[in-house]
Image (cartoon, rainbow, N blue to C red; front, side, top):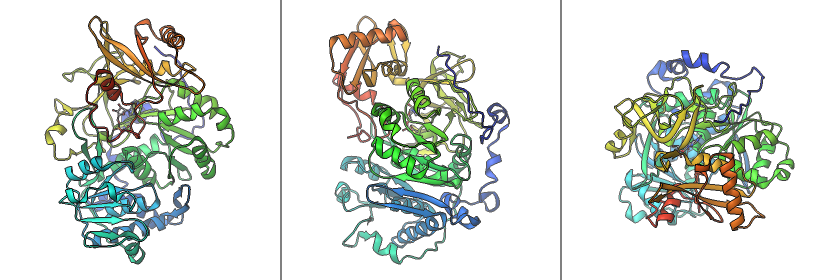
Length: 572
Ligand code: 6R9
């Protein structure tokens, strides 16, 4: 068991000062007073995130700092209000209304945020897509949800199989020299002349707002529906977990094609009215550090894969930049290796705070808070208002230190409300009606900290021992030669399964028998003999999703010569 503990900074200035006290007394309706339905019964996320600040005297505060290779633009809350109103008018004029599915398939630019907010102001349900999606992935999602409108660019429209989508009525193109026809709309032409006032569609808090498609290990991607009510949790976690305060400059590196890029790239920071940094373009260590320095970012939310790449780029690169503005750093998407936390302490002199949640959960659920002691490698503890437990396959709670299904008591505000078109799939997430079963396996220690072990289907059974792949991967990346590692169970007639590791090496290391042996004994010594991979294979890179998750199911399929399943979310 890991006993390393990192104490909180004693600034005494955290939004969530006393976790235990707050956890024991909190009820969600304490937050609900914040929003308009409290008085009118109706609400709209885009209003609460943008217009409310503009209308309450904060219109001249910067809402968005945008930059990419070619553009560098700032928008105040007043401007965001007006530009999203204009975008809303463009969409209303082509027939978009409440409940319509509107997809956004374009690079991260300010326009993406105008149309996203504009569509939500109309009560439409927005489906954000990764810019890198190819035709099949786009088609599956638009077809499944009977999309009415897609907003895209002249560069990307070739990947929208328009003729095969009978429900698709309009294509809005954001780009220059667009030729209009009965179906195609030139965004800028109409945007320029659109008025800056818009009649907002006030909706019920249970009305649909956003549809994120997520891939499972089998079958087509499924559409996870979220409603406006999610704002309650986005708002509270922005304070408790992101620890945002009035003058913060916040950067979430995620793309809106991934739930992190909407819940925490759009809604949470703007609900609490802070300045939000959006950096377009691809990842590069220099570019990212420069972004933090340029904008004096104070709160930074990213992912383990990005931290590992920054770590791999070396401290010399880090030392070229002044990142002293940073106050609070967070991570999501994959287990955060203790090694990465140690790196954060070494270079940034800050703790990286792990947070656990899923597309289906809509917002953070298990987290490390600024005011709390951190055990590196642990996801932390449930947020106030949320009950988490480890349960067996029947839904019985397991005692501390037993590995089982990570489950959440139903009823948190941002929980998905449907799987589009698949009610039976939706029901299958819930055990005895009461517990949402995440599909992750984990254990809880005697202090109430949760420890991720892997997806349930990734857990390895070797010679009677249950082993979580994450622990082994974490140990592997502590070895100086290992850049990234993915671990799977490979069927074995004697042991049930044996542990096989796929490894990409750092620059300057070459695969060899000796290196394999060295890595194996490194794991044996550092973890346990039974946890050392019997087989090892070196790869130039590992298959990952766009949100940085190592796709163990793809490694497994390669290994066993099986079909790889849906690959639409795999990185190029
Ligand atoms: C937000 C997001 C969800 C799955 C989840 C789990 C993994 C997310 C994690 C984590 C370990 C963390 N995951 N956060 N694993 N530690 N802090 O990632 O949503 O893309 O739907 O993925 O990601 O396996 O079940 P999504």
